Length: 163
Image 1 (spheres, helix red, strand yellow):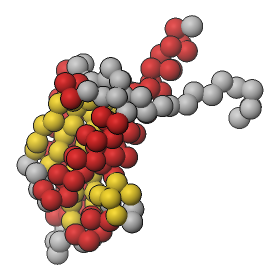
Image 2 (tube, one colour; image 1 turned 180 degrees about the vertical axis):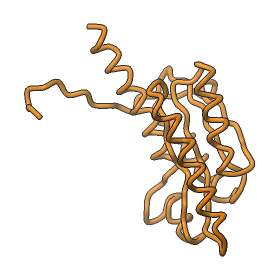
Image 3 (cartoon, one colour; image 1 turned 120 degrees about the vertical axis):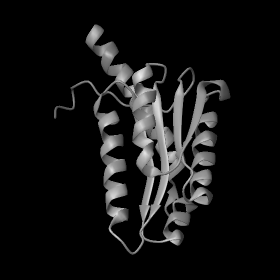
Image 4 (cartoon, one colour; image 1 turned 60 degrees about the vertical axis):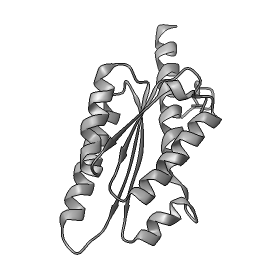
């Protein structure tokens, strides 16, 4: 890469963006903390309450369905996906995690909406707690700001192509 090449860097200014947030009700103590962090981060970066739409789904597997629908409406600049899957004694964990990640990834690959993936896939409840303000930061905040940054980068690319 040439240092003289144009550099497109994202920013996390959420003003004027419409953000859909899909949050799983399963493991609600964790997902509500993820949601609180995402909303707080968006507000801190100038997103208004009226520009946020929060939709609850039963579990992590269903997040992709609603995220896809939100992206398809064309109303949302960003979609933030929040959930928590904690490993159990069966293979169900693997199937739910794979299904959720594949579906969220398909929305992200579209390239027309910023996507933040805040679906935790952990072995224990304690590990989940570490990711909602503990030793591993706050993944709800990170997912929201990632979605905003991707939106801003998509906008910069569109502007560069129009120039």
